[in-house]
Image 1 (cartoon, rainbow, N blue to C red):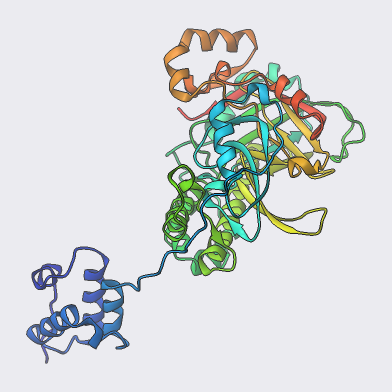
Image 2 (tube, rainbow, N blue to C red; image 1 turned 90 degrees about the horizontal axis):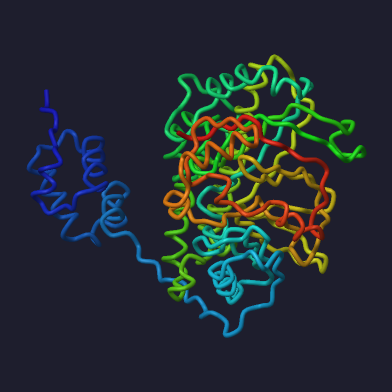
Length: 467
């Protein structure tokens, strides 16, 4: 009986192989295809592959090692320099928008692929495209124009429980939020399964395949930061609303979260790729794009849509768990993405890629949710389809303080006092999310009356955030 080949990583390191994936690949290939050879012959062959790679590049087995050692060098795309002058764009609520957000939008509007843009009333500085920035491009997608938390969204469910339950059974509802929601790194012992994991993208897109099992564990959970799940009171003011419900008060659940680790890693992977393929001046480097005619561009597009659908599934699991705990089926649900890119046909017939980074779709007749803060109302809105704003609206009130400033200037006592004054209970949450860190949502809504009309309001009562 021939002796079994024993090949170890340190054997390849002695030959001069670099640490990393290539060592594992080489060992597996040799054990699969050369297991009857003696160690000396195998090491001699591997040494030859390392030192004479072109000799083996077309070999069906050894060529895979060569490809890992010497990946083909792609010439970077010769991207155009920024245009000398930025395209004009409308600004909504300009008085409350910081200078940094304006500067970022100006840079975005100088991209060679930029066609149109708009700045929403909740805008503030971010990375690349400002939060609250809307940018339309032609046949190009900008991963950082979408953002890191791909498909971050709002989801609102109305129940047929009387709204008085918020006061009469507050402790029960508070315990319910604590028991049936998870935030940050906390996960459910038994997450629900979901049809999304049968999607072919999870097997066909390498980065999605790597993240699939992690996504299974995180489904139905919420992120940290400004993400929340909260019980509150909805007041529908429009009797002719698309929900088919009479005007009045309803118990409701509102959630805000995104695509978790799946979206964050997809964003990082393709942003890095875009920056390598599309080098831009320093002030615009995070706005690197991928052409939708390219393999990488279409792969990102599919991965982005997968992450967006995963974010929606996460919300549906959250609302399903709460509905089961309440013992009631929902009356109606309203949900909408932000941090996403859409193919949209413009009035002139052109198909454009519309990036909404922290902005809500507001096509004519389309419902959406724009939250306020822990103590300020959110709004159920109907889009007016305003073309100048690329049929968009704000995605919230927007920050007036950075997280660092909020942590250093707001005390726990002040936060507790303002919550008590407004009848709001808080589970978790940090000082960086205190209501004082946000703009006045009423002013933001006044600045975008031409973009949306109000169908109803949501008033938070019990708020759950990451600890």
